[in-house]
Image (tube, rainbow, N blue to C red; front, side, top):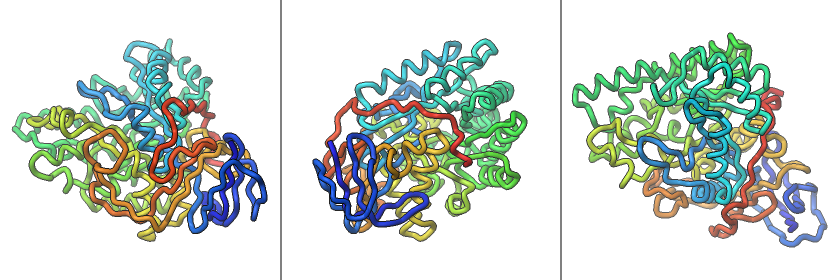
Length: 462
């Protein structure tokens, strides 16, 4: 199958120009003006942007949590992603405590195979790391699972101690892997939660109030210090607040290789949302939690100044009815997570480009190119150049779209951004040379997505 995209305005992280793109099989082969090449399908992109497919490096599909499982599996989640212009994602495999990383990877590969409609990779969540298992990190890197997540939160479930984190960081300094940190002080939060419940404060609001921003700032600082001692880069996931952003900014100003992401929910939502009455606030229970609204502009500024390099979603959806309401009488029983995979590009375009916070190039950079560079997929993905995978989105900057659970394709019964109007939407989505979304119809099929064997992070700071 060959495709010829004509007359589009090509936007990459570095360039902005009008040209044609010829795609043969799964690769971009030629870019030029007025290409006169025969193709099986010709797409006229005049008046539209041609951008590299989005890459979401933080999703939780088919993930067990709190006695239930996230409502999107690898089929429904990747279909939602495709409609929103995301053509690759990185999910999290979990090492079963006391068992091998290989076992965790095998479990998650089975979840994805035969279901994923777009390309995918995995991070490995490390739940314990005795000395005899450290070499398993090298095995994961050799298989293309080149990043590892560790938690300073969730005691007795996912949390590991500082020595374990330091050992993992030291190992990545040797094998080229990258440690991703969930930075919240889990022990202190656990104590605050117990005090809060004992006082009878059980509504969703107290999920946020029991996880203070200072607990994120302290843990972010500690994670960065551990990486400095280990002499290796570190990546802070789902950064929510100025307390943590300051620590990242200070480290980067010193020249330390610290990277961080934020998510649309922290740019658009606040403690006002989780305060909604009649249990509506449960829709906004995720960790780290929503913060006071003033943090939002600090995060937007972090994206402008490159103190934050990536916007991901932490997509971990649970239905409001039948899942979130497990915690109707106690916020500690509300499954943590929210849906966002389908609307990341919409929200970043609206808040970034339309509201003049940053350029089209920066929009592409934080949603596609930087994720590809930091997580070892560049230049195969994350850009538009001959030889790259033909993961391309035709974006209509004039098309208006209202975000709603009534029209989204994620398998969840609410939207965190219900009723939000945005200008700019996908017109056509191509994954490895195959048109998978056109005219608001899904044309792909379950299982067509490939596992991406990722390189180490070397391209991130070239």
